[in-house]
Amino acid sequence: MKQPDDATLAWVETVTGPFRVVSHFAHSHAYSNLWRLAAGSDYVWLKMHAHPHKWAGEVNALTRWAKSLSPQLLGWRDVPPTVLLTEMSGVDAESIDYTPSAEARLWSEAGAWLRDFHNRTNAWMGNLCVDGTPFEEPTDDARIHVRKNFDKRLYSGRELGILTEKEFNFAHRIFERDLPTLEGASIHSVHRDFTPRNWLAHSTGELTAVIDFEHARWDVAAADLNRPWDKEFARNPQLEDAFYEAYGRPDERFETQIQVLRLFNVVAGVVWAIEVGDPEFSEFNRVALHRMMAA
Image (tube, rainbow, N blue to C red; front, side, top):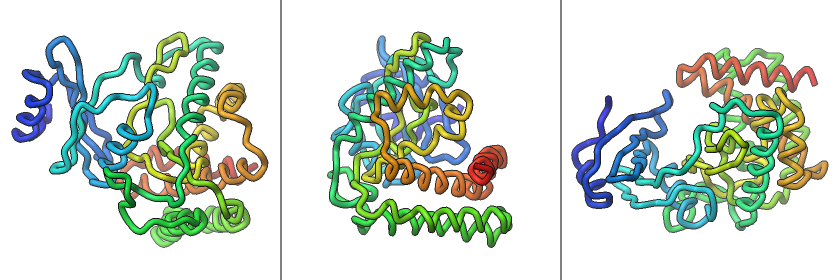
């Protein structure tokens, strides 16, 4: 099992006292490494980030934004970018075999949580430093912010032969048609990876925690609402009703913003997943892109 470096282990002990490493977890893209630690009668999580802006986003979100059902920061340091988190109750929400009513309850509670999380607004969008100041040059125009990142993935996908000409033309056309709906869009505190894989729950459908705030930043609210359309809502449309009855029904303009960010997400997913060596995830997003093309 991969171990943290000695200096990090020594730092953890200054916070928790004696402990032992129980397990290690990391995604293939290696945005972060996590270790579950046993410290006395409690369990805590050590998380080491690969990117300073993601570490700063998580620290900021957990100290300033997340008021309920989120881990507590026991400690953090910037070199290397590290956080120490309390363990929350519940299990991975994707691992539970729910009854229909329990799953609807989960999505309703998730909608209510996200509604409250989006209550904060800001004058600019982008990543943050730990003190809440901009990590890089901020912008107040969501169209510029989204276009810059979308174009990077779209044109890279065509140049590398990852996207077909038909896929490229569709994505380009729909994006140009609907991007103007982001003009003047309000900017909110967002999680940006708000899916069941980052929720903890009980089999009853009770949401017990939202975790992994490493992508959190100031952004448009639609950036938290673009993912379930091609997985959970496609599998069970009733979950959409349960979620939006708690979150609040989007009007036509907000709905179009969500679909713009959905398009951005699937195009970026097709290309990014190939770049990091995950063809299965790329194909999942390609199927999602074709679902949008067929619709």
